[in-house]
Image (cartoon, rainbow, N blue to C red):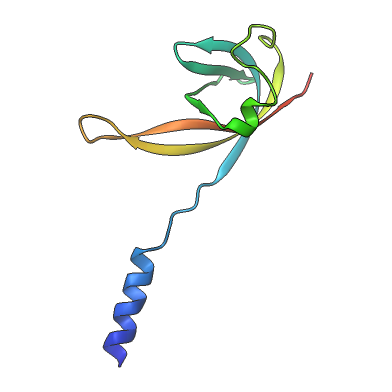
Length: 101
């Protein structure tokens, strides 16, 4: 009986789905550059977001130049993908946007 319990416990642990944690940054929008939504924060760190969720894209048209120079609060998550060499890499995905200026 103990063995069966341990098997189920091991299986449940293996089937656990990793949770994606969201982060947020206040940053200035630089435009859509080289297939990335480019932002820079107050410390000079740059963020290149490769994707934007539809609910966030409906709020603002980041493909337009009208919002370049505006300060945003960008909520994002980090997804992991695998390239052609079977190497993992991170993709920043915009989850939500809010203009602060």
